[in-house]
Image (cartoon, rainbow, N blue to C red; front, side):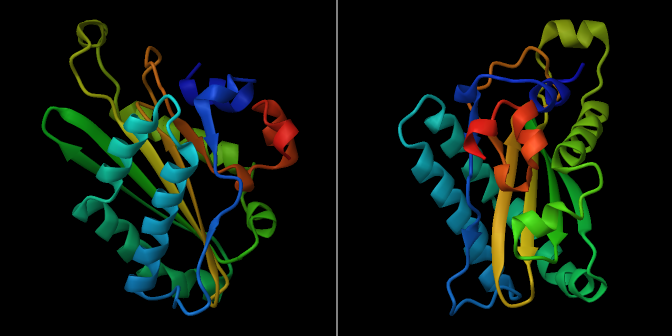
Length: 218
């Protein structure tokens, strides 16, 4: 059973999960359809997460992960994915997904997924996720597991970097927007010792929260 399925299918230690209970909302003066507006939203969300995490265990790991998420190639991909596909998602009133893999020599790769949800309310948006948000994360985690598949001897050596899973969700009705993000370091590594895991809690149904041991936060 994968780490994702374990995390999303049974109660885990709440110390391992940092929940963004509310999405980062755009100021009224910000145009959430432009590249500049979208980038402002993404940066503000990462700053908010780090601020909320404070000085708890894993804060430094989160800071380093966020710095990679703001790397030019990753940030540009997320901004472009949202800006180019938002009009189509709004017109069709259907979610739109884009993914990309970012690799660096001898360092962990980042599998970045971007979902545009053409509804501002997380409650309304999650109604359009077949099987729920946890199913979407498990499917993304399965893709990461395929990327990270290795032989027993390679796994035993433990020298091959594992892939981090990042999932951005952009909830937007064309005038206002909210940002959500899930971050799962070394998503397919069953032996990983993680100090931080972030789940976009607002996109979980009450039943999904209960499965994850987060029902007390509903």
